[in-house]
Image 1: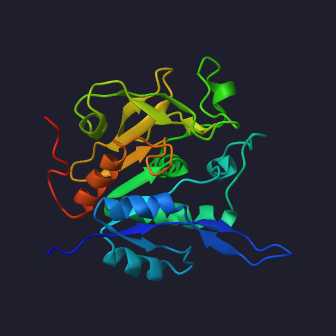
Image 2 (image 1 turned 180 degrees about the vertical axis):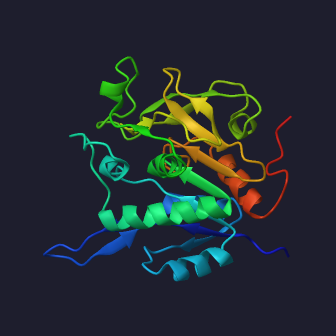
Length: 248
């Protein structure tokens, strides 16, 4: 039996407080989706030693960059918007180093939510810090009273997004207030909300499977089609040229 690919997952990190120790956590949907798609998830803690991280990446076949709280815009030379809720500094510092190493290696990578924003920033793009202010004509992309808030998705032809969703009506979950502004060089936008907000990017670099989605295909509010993105990713990490057989 062929070896299943090992897929690394970064984690969220919560600093110690007076009444509890520091800890890492990862939403179960991420590793459950990898398992369902035929991969073996491997948790990556926020390693401090770069040689240790290099050694771990040598053994992995791909990396899933998970979502979470906001990237701190001050790390990219921008002011801190009052709506930004930065992720823990230890996590962000590690995630940036991890993402840079993944990109340098052209490892298969699937980046979700804040993970997609990180991939775009590390590769040279930038972000809108608050959609209601930066794009006032945009529809709501986050509803604090509805965890299952959804909107339409317009996919580009000849893309992974089209292979997964086809050309029918698509709706995806939405719970973000930041989004991609300038797309990193070497990437293309392959899905948008009907209001123009970027919802997916894919690498244009030959031989590099690198995909990001602003929506969360791992979540309880995801659709039945969303698992196919994970199948494409796991297949790419396995070295397969054709990831998912398209429905007739």
